[in-house]
Length: 309
Image (cartoon, rainbow, N blue to C red; front, top):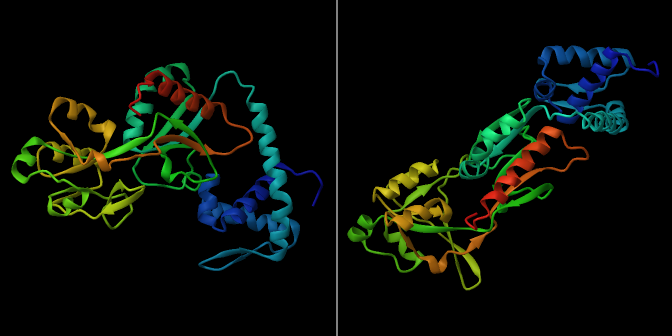
């Protein structure tokens, strides 16, 4: 192989590296924005170019050969460094541009993203924010996201995490009409005798067990009731209608408590937990568009600064 790579040689090398990293032609093709058949042709052409089989393929799996593993191990860091170098040069662009893919829990997006959208889109017309609202806990990198907003207890350890607001806590709440008909629980374990409005984490089979704090440790109560939702807003509306006791992040029901439409319960056992964080993968060079988004969210957090998390 010539010491200098031509454009087609480099495309074939990128194709090989993508398959070597994912061990999947379909995932590698999606990452590169080409069809699996086109990717297969690129890899086959690269193997013919070097004269050695680099991948073993079956109908169900892809694996690196010894030669392929050796080449991947030596070349991947160099290509990554080349990408970093090009990315560093692009930092000199005056206007951030490109797409920033964001994953956020619904309540966090309503609080930190939605209020800044008008000013952000006006200030950065060349940036596209691709926002996914989902209460599921996803792998940020595997999902192709650049950043995510989620609660502290579900952040991967290898992510950079920027705190947004103070700690949060969950509280049991009920409409006055429900309490008039069913009475008031005096301890979290009394909830097993009440009609509770449950919520299921997306992707989970069992509903979320309500968590309380006593004598220095957390404990769970597996409540029961007539309704199970995967949408917290609908669960809150059902609680407001007096159908049962709900379990909500305090700042989402503060206004209802102040208005008297909901009554907080069992507060003695409702302890704080790590609040919301903006998180993103560690990286040597950050794209200007991602930096602009991070700065905008942090500015919104500072502007709110009201202690409501």
